[in-house]
Image (cartoon, rainbow, N blue to C red; front, top):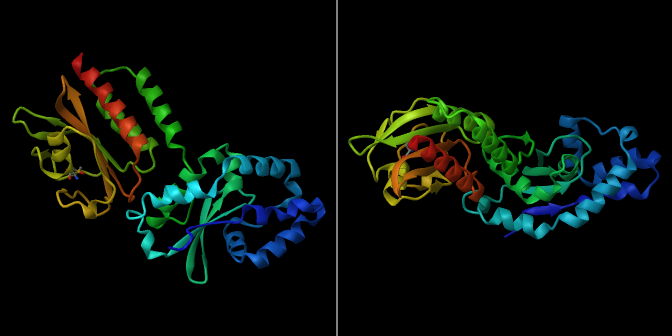
Length: 302
Ligand code: SME
């Protein structure tokens, strides 16, 4: 299999070997070497070298050498090779430097898509240590057809939500409030809702945010929701097209995570999250949502 990560960071920093007055000329030379830079300029504009400082690039280079190992980036991507459909070989990622605040942008080179990963922009935001995650995330968004974006740090988003919910008054709007904040703050949570087991022993839709669904009642064992309740465990489906026991709500939904809510080791309900992206969930989502469900269990206990 071909290389999915091309690293050109050090080559692009060649201008650091010259006096600052030469940087614009060196950039032009880089543009003839890497034609994608001209394409990126069409969207982001030409970098203004007069305003850039050498000491920032020096610091960037130092941190880059400390923090970035190419292998771990490729490894992170290949872990999800199947879900991300890598065998199509229809794109590559290009690690580079472009002094503008956009973390990734898709351009075309010889009829092939190139996801340009702007490590300088990540560094400016203090997120260079998250580069593997950022590259992975850009591919998830690229697969949905997005052409430009910025990295979001899931860990930080989850921490902020947890802090907010810990302080929030636990009144009767608490579960609706959870749906709202999750839907609002997590970019790839496109439907968030609770199903609770009713008197008939069936999962019944409670609070939710997102498009209305026809699946208001779901039997245990049926669909992803029913399976999670039946097996008493978190279910992650990274690509719903590959799941046979799945109840479709909308063609936009590409993946789903369902986490049971327990009381005395019995399932009393669950949180269900749909995403319009393929393969966006990981262990962090699982842990975070399991924490939310235990918060809900405590709340329902009162
Ligand atoms: N897809 C779910 C049904 C519920 S909707 O996602 C809101 C399932 O397969 O159980």
